[in-house]
Length: 433
Image (tube, rainbow, N blue to C red; front, side):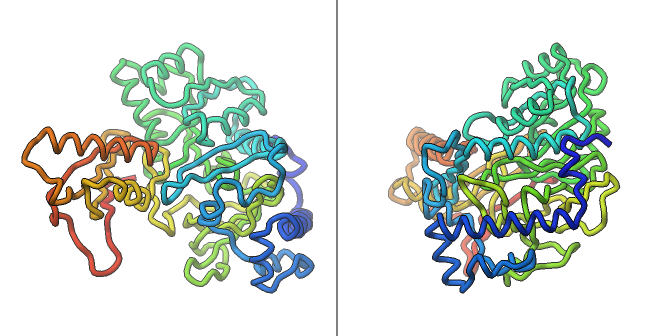
């Protein structure tokens, strides 16, 4: 089986243990010395880097949270001078504040190295033409896959998102053999191709899909593989850990996490205590070599389990099962993270609408669709259609600017949406993954 970096991908487990311990201890010293926030948190927890005497001692280190990035916006968690940064990526935040991630040259190299291993593990190599249909720009997906594909010597077709008929034409004309995008967008591409009289499995050279940035199921994988005649692989990552970094291998059973790059744990979301392999809980990532934005025991919020058995591919690196949900209430709409709290934040800035709203998520064809129902305040309510349409346009515009994705807006009368005595249930998700 082909490997990009056999030295690390085949490294014996005992050597990986030693390497992880050394890297984790070094990370603890770096954070203690260069991160005032994490230094204070370690002192509160009564732990010093000298206390990390084994891999098991890593659990003594305090957690990091998504809110830490928000509370220290834009760069309060960075541990290198600004002149050492070579790139920023920015993702959506939970209250209108984005999450800013900085990268040194080594950070980018490590991210690319991880993807080079991942893409090689699914059978891609020099000679492949990889169509990258993730968004480029502040979103990490497009550029991450772009540089990973170039690293293995493949040819990149940087189509980004949209202009789907043109994407199908280029896929044919330039001989794309693989595509990286969200699973829903691949389904949409397939539907558009059929309307053009093109069967992706028969009329193109496409044979591999690198799919992620939104939840998808084994049922969807089977549908994609049977309908389009390709092999579909899951990819995982978030901007905080660098971006999309890890994939399944050719076995298609669990996402490999490279132990020289990351240390993973699964914990009980309520108690924070570690869970054994096979038990689902909240994923915790420690990025062992990141320079600009070190992440130590970062509670990523995704629910999964670590697979205990060895992978037939022979790589002694742990695998996580497909993500089954999130601890928080985040939605993923067409590859974009959307939080109900973002919507609330945006609506509260508009004087014409109230604080009560409802989110309805559905799938129209292959693409996700989101409707936001919002109550109009009594003093702003009008029987003139033109007045209501003006408010509706204002709400839609504000939400698009806040969420970075277009949503439908329905205005409803005051008092017409459900009220809840306990925790509100504002999201109705009708999607079948």
